[in-house]
Amino acid sequence: MANSGPPDRSLVVAANNQNVEIFSLVWLDQHVESQYIRNTESKLRPNINLIKKFADVKKCQQYVEDLSSSDRVVMIVSGVLGQQIVPSIHKLEQVISIYVYCMNKERNKRWSKYFTKVKGVINEVDELVSQIRADRQIQRNLDEPFSHNLFNVNCGNGTSTSGINGKFIFSQVLIDCILRIKSKEEDKKELITCCKQYYVGNCMEMNHLDEFEKNYSPDKVLWWYSRESFFYNVLNRALRNENIHIIFLFREFICDIYHQLKKYQVKTPITTYRCQLMSSDELKTLNASVGNFISVNSFFSSSASAKEARSFIHTFFIRDNLEPALFEITADPNVATNKPFADISIFSEFNGEYEVVFMLGSIFRLNSVRRSSDHKLWVIQRTLCSEDTHVFPTIPGNARWVQHGVTVSGEFQNDSMTYQLCLPYSLCIDDDSQTMIIADYGNDRIFQLKTDSRNGEILAGGGGVGTQLDQLNQPTDVIIDKKTNSLIMCDRQNRRCLQWSLSKGTVQGEILFDNICCWGLAIDDQNNLYVSDTEKQAVLRCTLNDKNCTIVAGGRCRGAAVSQPEGLFVDTSGTIYVVDSWNHRVIRWPKKAKQGTVIAGGNGQGNRSDQLNSPVGLSFDQHGNL
Image (cartoon, rainbow, N blue to C red; front, side):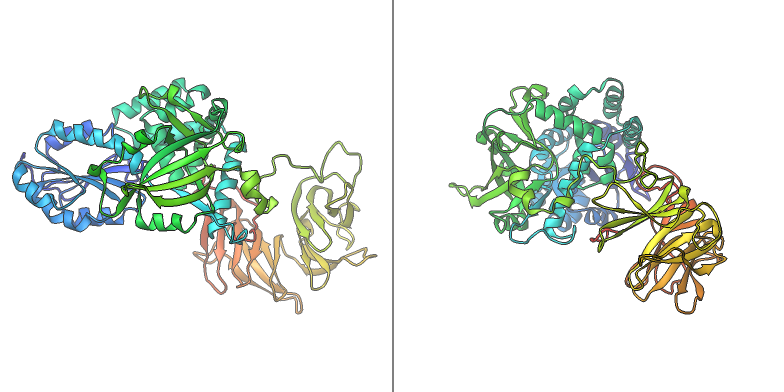
């Protein structure tokens, strides 16, 4: 080994420390900065892009232990340091293989033979690179995490997306949305830019990215997917780890894959196979779920030959904490019409490989989990199902994206003045009367529309701009006060909050608070009114009985400032959620807190998934999603 002093820090060979692929490589060697290791890195990066290097055993062990169990790590260790670290990290699920790179093979074989994850004791760099490359192809098929969601038919629909069935439903609705939302050229540019930053220094992947940027077309998407390149690696990790931002950037290409699978859809019923290494816990979960439904969170590849699928299972790759499983999949194209599957072998770089790919989110019924006749592996039988026939009849209809909306108000061509809107700023729904109540800002009125009607009714204002109690001037918000059967509204330009009875015959409102630059409203269980005041840059809590108002969020105190507070929400604990519009964020303000916490945006004005652009309103669904 070349002599070199140990470094004070680890070296990451990638643009950043966040891996966008499932596989990474960790190299532990006391001479980690030596030139021969640097030269070897360039040979390994086309197969495993992220290479993290250490000279310190404790730091290396801590790094590996902190990785997610869904990560997959290949390790290269020197003989001396390997003997120290391998006993400690050998049982970690994320560590899939270890290579001892040393000068004295015989000495290091003696201690390493007791550890099944040690796949080789090697003293030649070319042999090391060749074996890692060869093993990588098999590991791609066996070791990628089996990411899925279960739907238990005996659990009902579930009430939360954090529950078993809720996660299943959420994944299906997400895919439904991805296939319907149109992509933008900016998304493709952002994806390529992100990948180029990550793969900087990886000549092969940079060439792939240049080729993709210049020559990509939808009819080539399956070729890109089957190719060993950034496209498969980044997309696959994003899907399995549910990285919504990256999935969103890939949505054009996910749609292209969907349409190409549909174009090349298998025409007759088939049975396909796939081998996978699985933990005992995963197998127990599947065994307990027989008779239920399972959806996969990625595109699912399989082979038409059980023998070919089983060929990947070799004792060389079996590890102490994992067992081999053979998925036996029965699929009928006449049954499952929404999630296509196709033979993509004509696009594969590997000749003679019959590969059937199932669409992202495909749903299967789990038929059985049993030992094979030779007891060498588990056999998991499942059948491709139709989501409409088998699964979604048990899911509420409003959980799915309705493709075609219906204009219920504001259709300009309609002649009725009580049907047209001008800058509607907010709305609320009265569930009891099935009506929608709208703050019609530009028409200086509050407007009501029955959900089953085509014509509306003016509830307040509408008599022209003015300061009389039957007039409004640019109302920005309206809420329903159930306890008094009335509406409370922000009459912004008149600098007042009005209360307007919903009783028939009401012709004017009552001033609740004036000299207030109000924008948004909320009301809590104790009937306290919350008002966002854009002049005081604060949220006020006002008691309706004695008409007193106090600042409960924002204000001009250091660390508490907001700028243009608009939409509001107050939960049952008294926590306030406020849209801080000009700071492009949403803030959560617990009861009696002196300052709030940013829960959305706050990273400048923009259109990234972690940014907002002058937000004006907010609401929560029944599951607590903002």
